[in-house]
Image (cartoon, rainbow, N blue to C red; front, side, top):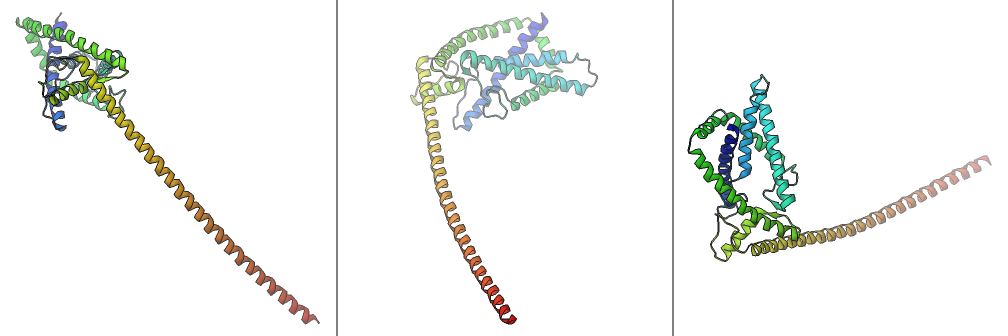
Length: 309
């Protein structure tokens, strides 16, 4: 039973802590785009990111049981534990990403611009980041955080905290899944994959243009079909613009290739004419030389005949 309470506590700390980290990270991303905006991360409405909760729980249990490995060298043991944590966390990302993309037509994060990525869900860079996070947990937190968690579990008020957190969490999860189902149906009907963060940003941009009150917690409040249609129209327009630019670029390349082909053809013709002229000059020169040689030989033969007489 102690492991269940430990998991519940680590999940709660990781989910809330990860949400705070993502909140500030996305705010700085918005600032880089010239927008001073706070973005509620994740697909839940409240301050909770389950993937970080699972992540911290996995780091704890792998470090806890990893310490029991029959490896005498402490450095080698630490390396094995950290690498195993990176692999498991990458698998968690892969499974979660595949579930949302394949089953729900929703993309929660996107690594398509990263080198070596797989479907934009996982990539070597973030696997390395998970390894660094695992190393940070193992060397900086694992020696004391489990003791803090055990202390919290031993307190009577922890049940109240669990009740509040998980009560809000499951209500939030049920509400958010209703929103996800609407997004899923729209995405499947239109044959697209919805970028969840882009959808929320588009809704916020639209509200700001209309000078309406923006929502931080319940971003999808209002006419969901209208939000989705606006997002789809913007996505379609963007795709058409990209297609137009590709077409323009293709036409420009075709014109350039045609011009280069014509220039090459003219150059080849000039080279052929110059070569033909050079060959003709050489031929005439050789003919003249042959005539001169022939006349010389004849002259010498004529002189030889006169000497015999």
